[in-house]
Image 1: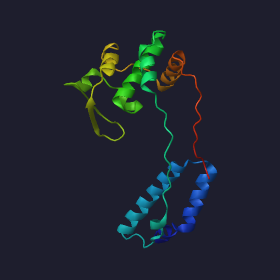
Image 2 (image 1 turned 90 degrees about the vertical axis):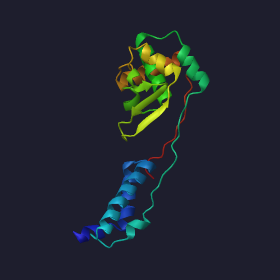
Image 3 (image 1 turned 60 degrees about the vertical axis):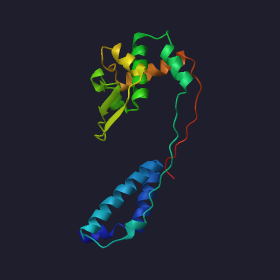
Image 4 (image 1 turned 90 degrees about the horizontal axis):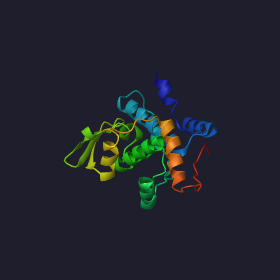
Length: 184
């Protein structure tokens, strides 16, 4: 009803933000929810379901997340490590495929040699449906070839456990402090 649309005003916005703070939502999650609310409100406004314009003043908050990246030396050490079990070698190869395909787990874990032609890696992202085309790395190609032309098959849980063991074996044992905003 029209009254429901009119209930989405500044006080509603502040109550929603407070509730997300109390629930412990991250700043970026809160921003995503506010952005979606604004889209719905804007569509309703364009379709003349309401005349409420308060939503235009809702602020979408965000913060830049901390990221962790391996150095080239660490990546080389992982590549050349000869103290790995069979499971760890699979995890290492899958990790290398991920690094050189710059893909999400659900994409790089399904890459095969069929995705390579004329020295280019070509795959469609499951999340966005967009096609990615980039030069294929010799390391990525070698990982696929030594695994029968496909990315090694591991569950995410087994992969995470094994890649951590690999990193310990090459001396990556430093603890990192990562801060995340939760709630207010």
